[in-house]
Image (cartoon, rainbow, N blue to C red; front, top):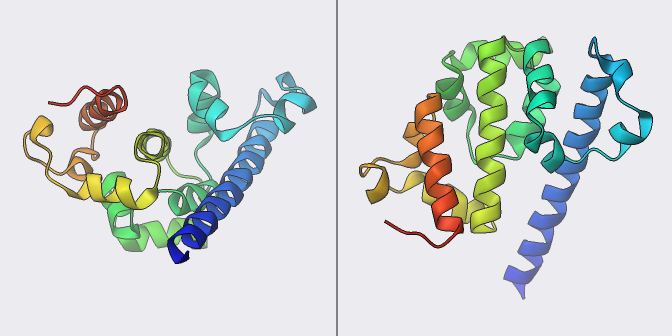
Length: 176
């Protein structure tokens, strides 16, 4: 029974974070230079999944720079620690904390990495069904990825593509 309640709690928490992500993304898009292009209805009905599948919306957010508030929501919805994020963003943990404390916007290259990790996490959760299973997979050396932990490959876009490809193969039942 405890496991069942844990699953309900985790799913409720994930749903709340996704709702917050959707509101934050809609707010960012409203404030963008092309914000007038989006109808109120479009922004109200924009889901996090739809955002991640619309490359033009992603480009708009990346070019504006991901605000610290969006980063914090994405960070809560990923299996990565602050130290992992510092490595992924190629900045010190101290600098990362400063971005958050000062509510700054991340640079374009860092914003792109943040959105990429949101995409990886979204697919990982779809494939594994839980953050814990996905985290375990990320931390386990993978034969198909050269016996490297998938998490270690996420520091650059080529590694991210390898991880996404492997997640897609697992999703379709194609195992190496």
